[in-house]
Amino acid sequence: EICTGEPVQISVVASPDHYPIVNELTDQWNDAGPVADGRCVSATVRAMPASAVAASSGPGWDEARDGPRPDVWAPDFSAWLSLAAGRPDAAGVLPQEKSPSLATSPTVIGMQRPMAEALGWPKRALGWTDLVGAFQGGKTWANYGHREWGAMRLGMADPTRSGAGLAAAMTLMDPDNNQTQSNEELYIALSASQLTTTSAADPAALLRQYGDAGAEDVPALPAAIPVLERELAEYAAGSPR
Image 1 (spheres, helix red, strand yellow):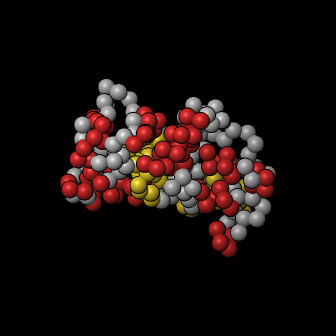
Image 2: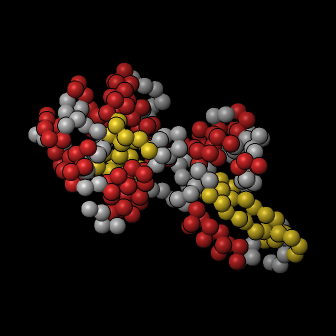
């Protein structure tokens, strides 16, 4: 199908870590000469954190501050859509039907191997509730045969900015995902907060701590952090010390 005239411009916003692949795919699409109802179409992609898009979505989108209003938004975690839609003004510009998933990567717990082994991994699966529950009531690594490691330390990615951090927070606050919190769930969430000694904007910043650390620093680093599986694989591929 042939099209003429100036192309209709489509603005696409993707999360920064997804931008390279989304931009590459969009370039391929543009090169194929897409047509819609006889009109030429062209898309441009830019990177913007999903948290910022969620906060800015709505009739009051500020193009001077945030750039062109997106026609397409590809956040890195579906919960950002739900958070944005929780604002009445934003709900009106977001799709009412369930948005399609383009790709998935599990949010996992990145954990120092000796510490995971001390808690029974790999024979025992470890989730956030298992980790936090093992150190409630003032327990330390001394309870698991490693007094030299001191207290349990967790690292957390900022749940207001990081998809992995938001997923971890949601899991800690409502492990059974029934939309209500029991007293035990509240206790787990509070304990997790008390055990968190390090926070960062995203998992990449948390992972850098381990790559920069010497052997003497390891016990003082968080035993566990939330991270996307692909981020952990990318870190491991760099042969960290």
